[in-house]
Image (cartoon, rainbow, N blue to C red; front, side, top):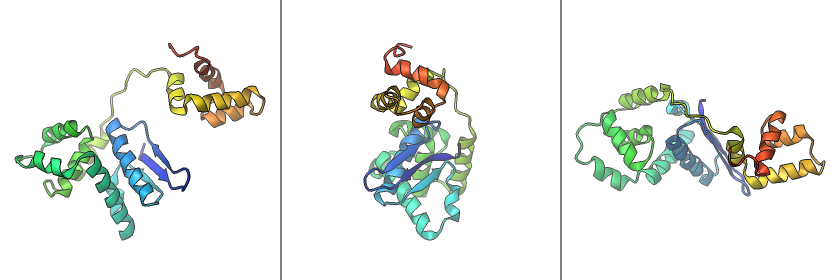
Length: 200
């Protein structure tokens, strides 16, 4: 729950992982933050609470600030943001939410922009972010587990793994390990691959 995402630097196959239990707006920011790390060729883990930055070595702190700044600039361009806040006198939660809606980003991203431009205090920023991080997101209806897993894994990869299973080159437990599921869930995924579960 504490991790927003991470990246692993590799010349051929660099990797970005996003925690899909986070809100979509946080995932989008994390994606751009991790991309900045890959461009700098620095593997990292990003946690939800950015107060950890205070304990970093100066070089690491500069890297984290740069990655945050690049992600913010891509998602909330400074020229447009400056124009939007030019005539505002207060930056309460309603104002932050309106700006977040405009840019389709998290409230924290907007508040960070306000902090970086000295329009809100560090104390106010920390208090609001801490408050928002404690809020429990609303649970949805759930959805179909097998279709969700198939979407994440991709049809080509599923067909490859099941093909090896049918050829006897993988055991059921090995196939389940490759797919990141329990062995008992293979049958449900197989139905999706064969097209039987697509209307579920």
